[in-house]
Image (tube, rainbow, N blue to C red; front, side, top):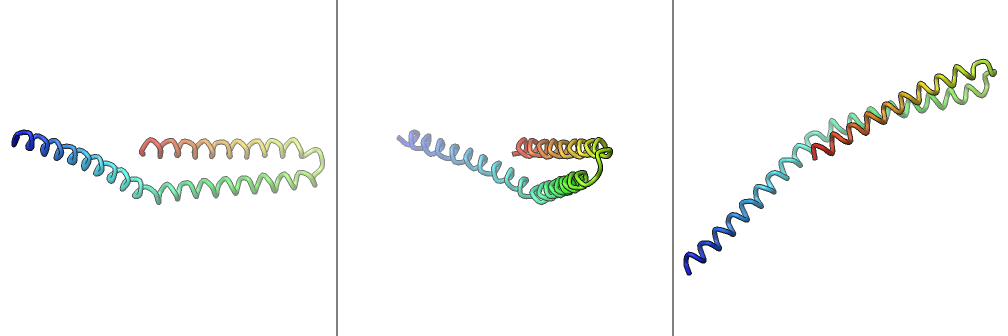
Length: 105
């Protein structure tokens, strides 16, 4: 019976050791996420500010376009498309950063 008890204790020790390693790996991963969080938040904040500025410019131009004569309408639509392209690029960058963050998790 002692060998059976020893086997049972050994199995229990190994299970606990494996769980401990899993917890240590999870804690290390969490520590990396916490360490990278300020940079990610700053990047997201910068991108958000750029999007807001671009949107504000677009809205201003849209409002200005209503008071300007019809000759400038094609030019303003080109500018709006350019701004929309920038906004789309920023959104793509944000999506890419989100994918990178999830890959690290």
